[in-house]
Length: 491
Image 1 (cartoon, rainbow, N blue to C red):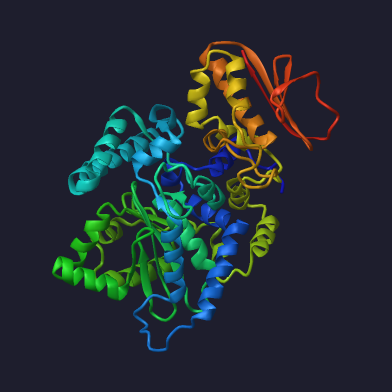
Image 2: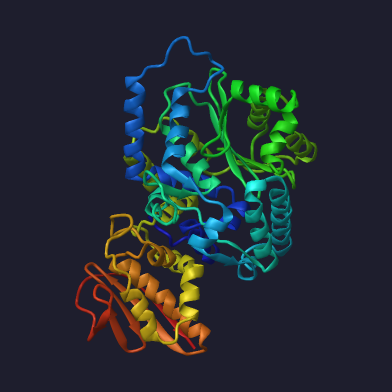
C-alpha cells in the first residue's frame, strides 16, 4: 500500500488512527468505523464469532418468538460483551492509562470547539455527580481533573489490546476480562453484529453519541429494533416500552433523558449528523429513515433529535467509505475484509491497518508520532535522572512476547510499560520515545536513532548502540536486512 501521495496532515491523521483518544473521535466520528474494521481484522474476534454461530445453530429460534423481540444473534453478541469485558469508570481509566494534559491536547484541535467540548464535559460530570449517588465521587474527581486541565486518558484500541489489558483492574474477577469504555463496547457490538446475522436480520446500525457516551441502535428488514446502551443494557422494543410505562408513567422522553440526556450526534455508514451545528453528511433519504425508526422504537421523536432537525443544514458529501461499509454486512471472513482493504488506496482503508498496528505499511512514521503522545512514557522520562535509568526501566520489563503474539504488529510505549512485555521492536520504540522526552525535559542535545532489522532492533544514543533483545551495549549493527528506521536530533 503506497503512502507517497499523502502529505504531512495525512501522516498526522494516520498517527491518530494508531490509538485515537476521546477527543480524536469527538472531532472525527469516522474513526468509529476505523475501530470496527480494525476489530474485524482480529483473528481472536473471528474465533468468538465462530463460537457464537455454532451456539446459535445448536439452539434454533423458536417460531413462537414475536417480531417485537431482538434477533437472537443480537442478544448473543450483547451477552458475550457483557460477560467478557469489564467497563471502566473515569477513575479506573486514570489509574490504568494515566491522565491527558489538556493544554497539550488542545493544540491539535480548533481552539473554540475544544473549549466547548471541555465545557460540555464539565456540565456532564456536574450532573453525573448529582444524579448518580454510588458514583458521585467519580464525577467529583473527574471535575477536579478538568479544573486542573487534565482528563483520564481514554484511548480506543483494537480488541486484541483490549483483551491484553485484562489483568490490570486490580479487582478480583472470576473470568478473564478485557477492559472497555462505552465506545469500545459499541464498536465491538457493531463489528460482531455486521458479520453474524443472516440475511434480513440487519438493515442498519448507527452510533448514538455525546461527549461522554456512545451507544448503538439498529433495526432489521422485518421491523425488529434494538438499542445497545452499554454492555449490560440491551433493550428490545418491548423492553423499552415496559421501562417507559413502569418507571416513567409513559413519558418516553423522560425515560430516555434518564439514560442519555446529552445525546448529541448520530454516526452511520453514510456519515454523521451533529446536533449542535446541524451539519450532516447523511443523505436525506437515509436520515429520514433513521429518524422514523428511532421514533418507532423510543415512542417519541426525541427532543435532542427534533431540535437538531430544526437547524439541520443541507447534507454535505457522503462518507467516502460508505459503499465499502454497506458491503460488510454478512462479511464471510477476516481474510475477505483484509483482501478488500488491501485493494483500496483510500485514506480510510490505510487507517484501519494503523489501528490494527500492522508493520506491513509503507510508512512507519505515524507510529512514532502517536508514541510521542503517550502520557505515561513521558512521565517516566521526565522523572528519570539519567539515560542509564531509562535503560534500567526498559531492562526491567520481564516479558519478551508481543501482546499481539505477532512481531509484525507494534505496541505503543505506554502499552509496553503497562503490560510489562514487548518484542525488541516494541521496546525499541519505547526507548526511542523515552530518550526523546528525556533530552527535551532536561534541555540536553542528543541524537536518537532506532534501526529495525529482520532479526533485532538497535537504538543509538549519540555514538552508543543498544541491542534491544538484550538491552545491553553493542559495538555495531549486524548486517541484517534493515526493515525501517527512525532518527531524531534534539539540538
